[in-house]
Length: 488
Image (tube, rainbow, N blue to C red; front, side, top):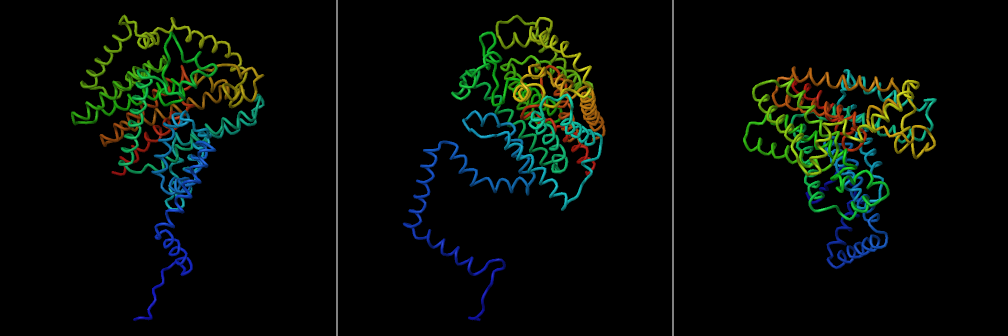
């Protein structure tokens, strides 16, 4: 018995010896403390002389590899990280992190796509590429890819920078379709969505009544920002987002989700919480001063009433309609409410008239360029890579107008066809799903997609984080709810 030796598989005696020697070194209290002290001093000095960049670099080296592995190997963790960072991206950026956070988002999406194909080997399910939505997304991506050869394009570099925001983001639809497989995870994602929206709404209240942070004020003082955000002696609020438009649209869709959930929850405290969140989201949205967002909730409620016509919904809709009519016509000196009222009087809105004039000016170009002027020809990328071009200085001010200008009437037709199929699938699935909870989630996402589509006309609703990610999450959930219902 004394000669019996136990060998651990995969662990050599040499390897165990090194571990034991290292452990023994730290077991000697003085030696271990000295080593840790030297490491701490070195890291502290590095951060002191190199600033926050060194600190971020150290954290990246410590936590980066485990996070990368977790995103690829554990897709639910990866999706959670993606949705969190999509919401907090600009908030983190304004803290002084001088790092290409957009590239980080591209990397996370790339890792999720890599994980998607790795998991396909172990659990194959290529049905996610079937169906009208999937086919149209693939067609849309291919059309955007071949735009690199557009003869009217002034710059290929503009295409390179823009295609990332099109192809990679849209591919996350397939990741969501494949990896969201349980109703428990679906519930978690909706709670995460509303939790982040709640944080954003509260932060907007902080900006409105307490003020901006030093970093935010420095950004507001930069060239050209005040012209866009300082109106009638009042700053438009943007909360944790890139701009007031992204903020207001996210408050709208969060309100819509809560309204849909009100039709499902039974407990009084749940109804009270949802009602309070609706009030908070709606009121904070007014701080943004974004007229295009104000009409989205009434527009979504029209579809809501059509789909959910019953006594309870009619009463709720009637009360909501009276509230909106009161807000539109009530005499007030509150600048937020005054701006809200002008959204329903477009003929009195100077900015609306300017948009109409711009659209008339660009119509001849659209009619003579059926495949457009090239991806990235307008906006920031156009001004950066082809500042001398006709389109570089054209302000599209609309997601649909941008598509028509950059991708032509062909691109506009394909995009509208994609939106049509998403809405059609949502309506069909809503009436086919039997599970009341899944039916409610499908309705909520259908209304979100509808609101984004309406909002994509007065503004560019689907190009900025987090809306671009969450839009395709909503589109995926429309089909996921039907799949989960069929499994029951």
